[in-house]
Image 1 (cartoon, protein in one colour):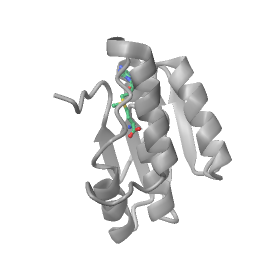
Image 2 (cartoon, protein in one colour):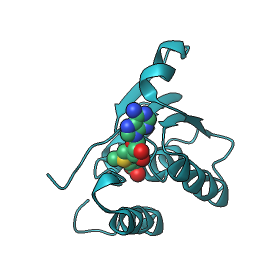
Image 3 (cartoon, protein in one colour):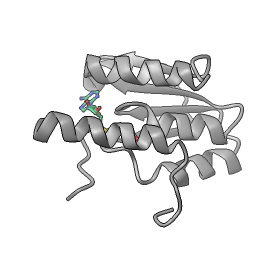
Image 4 (spheres, helix red, strand yellow):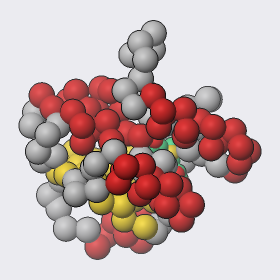
Amino acid sequence: MGHDKQPFQHLFDLSNDHRAAHGETCHVYPSPQAGQWAALAAVFSVERVLEIGCGLGYQAVCIAEAAAGCRVETIENDSEHADLAAAQISLLGFADRIKIIRGDAESIMPNLKGPYDLVIEDAGVDYSR
Ligand SMILES: C[S@@+](CC[C@H](N)C(=O)[O-])C[C@H]1O[C@@H](n2cnc3c(N)ncnc32)[C@H](O)[C@@H]1O
């Protein structure tokens, strides 16, 4: 990736704009690894993904787009992020395959029923470091 346009560039930009507007406490960094996870999910025909840290939904959308039969569950504890992600996911037509689980990952994860084919930890990651 890097030199090419990101897939879903508008959502990538929206995520960065949101973080810029909210300052240091906001960690919505659209995942620079989204393309690689999406390619991997497609190649291995992954059916069920768990993402920890939905942000505005960028990586979840990339994966769902690339892997046609894949369902993504993504955990988000910031209600504003979850609302914005839900709107984008719906707008882009992925509401039937991407489920946002609202709340803190630490308390949610023990109650999830696997198995998942792929689990991606992306909560609170500051890619600027
Ligand atoms: C790096 S961003 C996620 C970026 C997203 N995966 C993407 O590619 O656009 C991290 C997100 O994790 C959320 N988060 C941080 N700690 C969390 C926790 N304990 N449980 C759930 N979500 C959390 C933050 O609110 C933020 O939206």
